[in-house]
Image 1 (cartoon, rainbow, N blue to C red):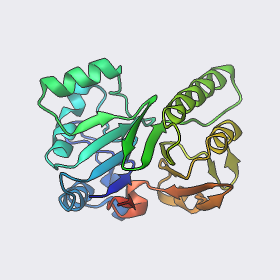
Image 2: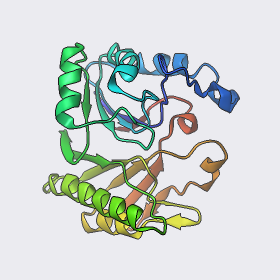
Image 3: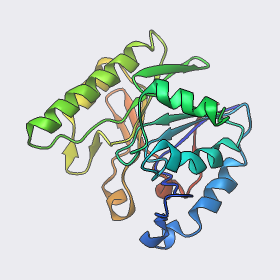
Image 4: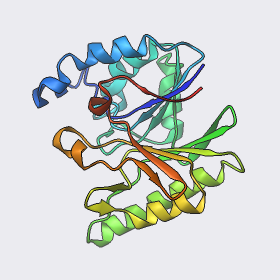
Length: 226
């Protein structure tokens, strides 16, 4: 039994948008994902940190969800910037129930417990200089805080899609929230290809930061804890 995490699978079994066009690092990536997930058991838990499917709707993402559902581990989905299929929690749960998808759930404005840990997460955001993005950032900070508050006194493992910090950029609002709640670990995705070189990993204050985008991990989920 262990907790794992990986982001940015970018599955496209029915969306016809294979990531293989982005070079050799993505060659055969769906098969590689399947091989790595087949090593996990029903006792394991996997956090998928955003950009799980290229599907533009739940119907278009269904094949990707069923691909993931064939592997018995429990999976929690965090929203990514390319998860256009994302809708309300009620609609997602109803869709999963109707389609017989039993191993997928969402981690969004919420918290789940794994052993002694609280597992929290949200999409996060990049702040750019316009009012719309300020509004989105404030909403994401609120969602993150709601998730972290639900942790109570447990040590917190936090999963974001957007990196709150990398070379040449940081999001003070997100970082301050992580510090306020003394988050032990923050894993993030979103960075691919040449952008991976801009990652910042390691400890900042009380929080350990780690990049978990799929191409960085070689499409093998990172073990977080037993």
